Structure formats: structure tokens, C-alpha cells
Image (cartoon, rainbow, N blue to C red; front, side, top):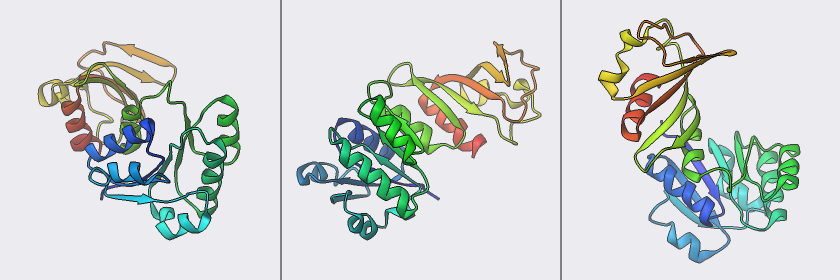
Length: 219
């Protein structure tokens, strides 16, 4: 089943997340108080809605509590960001990621229950979108428009198999450049290295190949 996301605030940051989630094939509800911005995303998101999310009745009417993940990307209005996060928490949203304007704002957001706080100047919308779509991806770094380095947690399907057994390079065109295992880092692991459950695989390759690997092996 496709995951369902709601993005509140359609400025540059929220807009980039909206675009990236839509590209990943996710169901996305785009929400903003500005009607012009909402109209811009009407063709990109699954649903685009004009609404003031500092009003609890609006949040309840949109059924946001049923979404898998809500991203609060409200611009310069810190009060609106905090109020929205608080209401989302109170109505029982499962997972909330919030954009912080500064360190003080981030502290408040964490205190009121935000699951993940991001700083747009440090985190790219595409990187965040990629990590929240996959349960196994810990981190995602773009090397270019088409290539990335990704940290993936090894699941039961990979555990107990050596790199040569899995033949990842030949099948998917990607390379495991290192393995993080508890406090140890294995750089350029040997082909006969057996992957253990919960190992963190640092993988490099083309985005299309990494996505193929995630969908076929990690799902």
C-alpha cells in the first residue's frame, strides 16, 4: 500500500518535499493558507487544500490523523508552526516532521512532541522525502542529479548472506562501499563478508538502481 503524507506549508521547502514525494509515487495532500500556492500544487499532489491548520476543526475536517506522516513546513510564522504541531499531536497523528526556523524553535518543537525536526539550510527536501518513504533508509546524500550515497539497514532478507551471494553489483549496478556494525566500520568489505541483521550498508550508485534495490530486496 502507498503511504499517505500531508505537507502543510507550500513555500520553497514544503514545495520541494511535495514534488519529491509525488515523484516517489506517494499519496500527498498539500495544504496552505495561500490559495495561489495551493492552486500551483493541484496537479502535483493527490489533493491540494486551502486551510488554516492552527484551527483544530480544520485539521479534523481534513482527516489528517489518518495519514502516515505529516510534514509541517510553515514559513516564517513560528507561532503557526508550533500551534499546528501541537494540534497534530493532540489529534493523534502517527509521525510529525517539522521545519524549524532556529535552535529555540527546534527545542520547543521537540518538547511538544515533534518526531523529527529539520533545518532547511542543512537538509534538502529531496533527502528528507527519500528517508521518510523507506523504513530502511537512514540517510541519503545526493552526489549529483542521478547518483547518491545511501545508508540502508540490513533486514532479514539480507542477513546471513555474503556480498558475493547477493551479487548486488551485477544485479543492481550498485556498490556496498562500507558496512557499519555496532562500533565497527568495515571499509571496502570483501566479497565473502557476511551481512548481519541490523548492519548499516553504505551504498553508492545511480538513484534508479538504488530505488530498484530498495523495492525488490528491502521491502
